Image 1 (cartoon, rainbow, N blue to C red):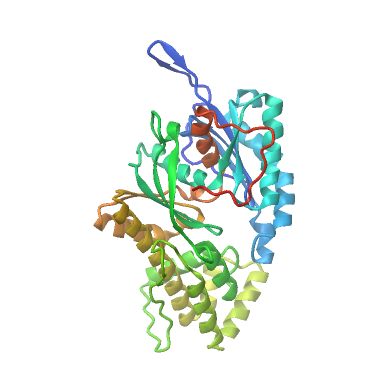
Image 2: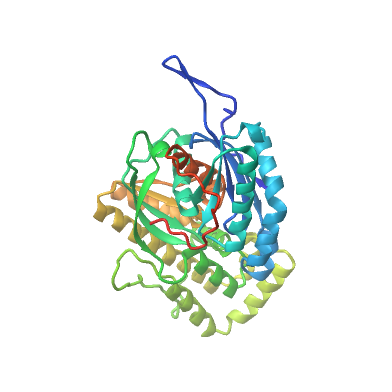
Length: 404
């Protein structure tokens, strides 16, 4: 079990006096189980994180090179009770202190979602508290605002939001919902601008990592190796080197496609049998538990290091280019980036440098809040709770739930 503590503020027992009246904070228990992480968190008024606990299934799925849905569901069943109890313990609260329960309704793996939804329904019924269904994607948007609040900032809306992970690559126009108050109280209205037509960006990372025997998940290890290559100042100029041209997409200019860059890597490796020996050496290293960048880099030839670096740069370039183009066309001055791939160091650096030149403000969550977590679910539940958008007894998981 991994605990994400971060800069969480101890306000479990704070009451605020305003105009002679005492304002009691709203404490929401968030539950997230959309894929392979069982998470629970307590968030006050959609802003302040009292606790955030994530139990990762990485070691379970690593041997298969990806998430096995049935195994994920079983592990959620084992972990959800202790994870929720730990979240309450870290927050210094008891079940009776919770004002509402927020739970991920979708999108995600249906078996995984059902564990969280079922537990949330039972818990809310037993406590006599409202249950708030939350769209996982909306949670990722709130993750950015949670992080900004910790830094004393409020991202200006309207904004363009890129949600990029192993399962999603989506672009939204975000503006405040009708009503009074800021985003934490009002929530957001979303308009979908584009999305991937094939592989999600994180999925492409995983497939290329599997092809090159770099381990699972592929995103972090490719990022670490590419970062070290860049830091070393190495410059590879093999004559038959692979260079990725910008992806051209007919129709919607804000759609993405990563199948081509993944397939280009596959064909390049097939055309160079000299890759075989080092790939086998890395497979052996992974079997022996040597899976850190420091373990695998010495087993990578200069050509492989170049390939890894160029692959990442191509993916990052496409994500940044289309997102900033959408911001310019819609007149948005703010860019929000969230999801697991938002933790990528080159993506953060490229957005920061490009956006500054175009006078855009860019906001990322912390790396802990970029990946799946329940703090973002509790935060997203808050404006829905205020609006009375609570679950009915027939609430069910929706694996293909859309945001807009």
